[in-house]
Image (tube, rainbow, N blue to C red; front, side, top):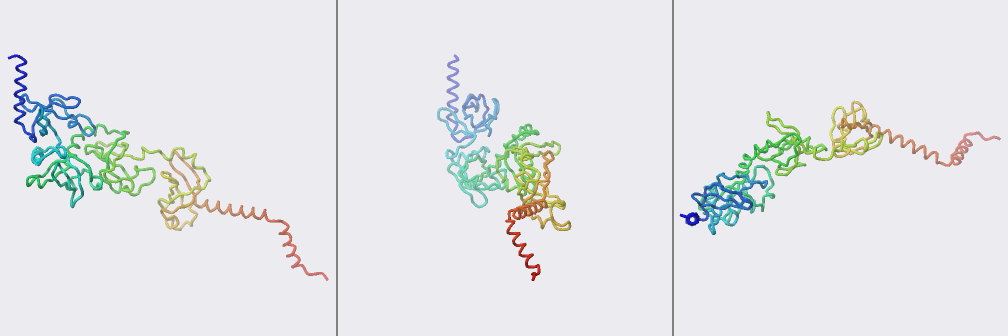
Amino acid sequence: MSDQDEDFAALFEASLKAKRIEKGQTLDGVIVSIGPEVALVSVGGKSEATIDIAELKDDDGDVEFEVGDRIQATVVSTTGGLTLSRRLVRGAASARQLEEAFHARLPVEGKIEREVKGGYEVRVARQRAFCPVSQIDIVRGTEPAQHIGRVYAFRIIEFKEGGRSIVVSRRALLEEEQRARADEIRKSIEVGAVMSGRVASLREFGAFIDLGGGVQGLLHVSEMGWSRVVDPSQVLKPGDEVTVKVLRVDDAKDKISLGLKQLMDDPWAAVETRYKVGEIRAGRVTRVASFGAFVELEPGIEGLIPASESGIARDADLRKAFPVGADMEVVVLEVDAAARRIRLSSRAVQQAKEVDEVREYAERQDAAPSEGFGSLADKLRGALTPKQK
């Protein structure tokens, strides 16, 4: 048999096998080549099928498979050869295909239609499915509005009554992706690295940031901004995308410390040129301690009024004299940019005002007509002096 006859026989055999394979059927195959647009998958014998290269890429757009890797996919077309898909495209899958995907644990594509009791109604192909609220995301506490109308990949975790009862999970797929990426992500985490992540949860002491692959780091409340942050929920919310800087990595304790303010302009830069000793500044009381009161002069710049500069009696209550949140004026006594410290005085403000009042009074007296004053003095002396007879 000539090479041409052998090629024709192989193609004929492949075409017969292709005819026996039905649309919606799930096949196991091995990737034999990867091109710029499609990959060829051997599905047994000399039969080959094609799959779009986009279906072999991860979220970053990188092909996550190599030649020789085994994959499982669904036949979406038999016209002109076999075409496979690892995702059942929304609107193109029948109930039978969805059942195949359920048994094969293949991802399906669905659109979040609306929020319902306990979760979401999802449109998968022509079918309605239910996604419990706990299965919509890895991040807990996300706002329902951010999911409505979005198209996601899901895994069918329950298929009953011929497709009339379908339960799906997006979280299952996200967790699988996390496990696959965890080792790679950990290798990229080093002190000083700037990384993108997503807020996984909030605590009173800070926020846990998912850096990918399920790897989380702590963004402490003190590292969220140069201004004092009391409530992390005023800055972030679960699901927010955020860019952070790696501050510390403790492999022994599996802890990663992150910073947000380090990526912002430092308000203490050139602070000595903006604050002059002796000038009066407006500020807001942020907290009070036994030794004095802290006043925010601008976002990220806080100064201290020592108790000795408070202007109140030694045994008086500083917290009553300086209620948190109160606006006030202070005099700058000392600026130490290296130590990030500014010493303030409220007593000096009152003293300065008294000096101004005395000066204004003196200026008014100097400006008063001298003859008017003399005339009044003459009249007084005349009234007090006995008349001569």
